[in-house]
Length: 107
Length: 139
Image (tube, rainbow over all chains, first blue to last red; front, top):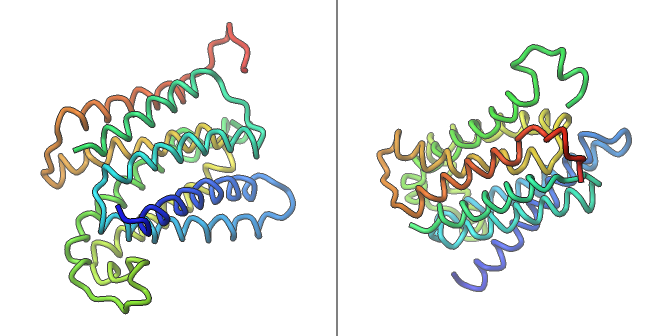
């Protein structure tokens, strides 16, 4: 993994988390819906194109730990930015899924 | 889930739509995977190469993108009805379904590590969607 690829994968995962939070806000708020959905869609489009590019040059074992990390970050962001309240079982589930994603990327 | 969600036909309800999202993402990724070798052969202008745009030269990739767009419309519908901290982990079930689909449809093999990973993702998803224990108050 080159420095450029590392930068792109980090940027892509940040875009994924920010984009999902904006989309969720856009789909549930009364005001400012269109701008949030548009900004969220733009960020996820960037993620999609970056992911397509990274998949062509990198093994999944390099990419899946970042996918797992963005899952954990996103659940934190759901609490922090959206005020969602989590159960303990949600965190157990998220930890299992993130670990599973790292293992899936291994071979 | 909303009151409207409870009276709607089952295909419009949040649990089915959320499951449909994981399925659409999986189908989209399998189509993209199928098209990737053909896509790599198509040249792209240098300034656009970082986007992977040359992939659009493959029919499989175009079909994959159509499925991805459908999954996106479905995702917006789900977001109106399900908290993000539940919807997003559940849609990551696709990371278990993709290697399973690649095994069944594309004949790809996987080793014990990937098999264990698939099992962990499925188990984790169950913890996320598990109905709340009525004896315990939501944290």
